[in-house]
Length: 191
Image 1: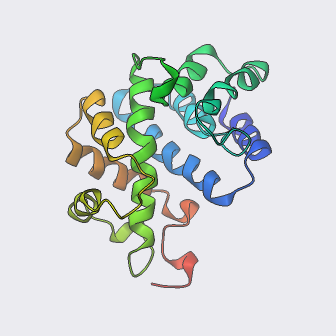
Image 2: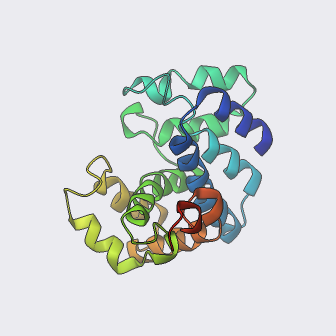
């Protein structure tokens, strides 16, 4: 399974532009970590792109990702990637053991949260997002209510990276792909 095949599967099952951009944001973070850790960037990319591929057809826990896993198996996605996808949802009971599994869990909720923080900036740009503002927003329970703050904290801890450093790393990874993520400000018609 390569990145192009993963993208095709994602697009087949995911029609929402926002959900596709979420997959790309998680991919940006995961690939940056793969590079830092000397891991297989293509495998980590595929994992990120497919982690929520079934969200639109299985929007309820535990259906997502449990009912999506057999679809990926039929499509030839490796057991290692499928296991990582299963482990990113704590309710599946699949413990996170590998570095890939821990990184996916650590980046998933944070990438969504960083996107939400960027959207409330004047220019709607990830380039305006700073670690301190993210930390303040994490304390604001009314902001991006659906994002599980505990998962963000636990994800960084499981990955063995201090939370502040993890936030900074993911901001930088998303900045590198800001235009593709729709977070460069210019695409929103504002700067």
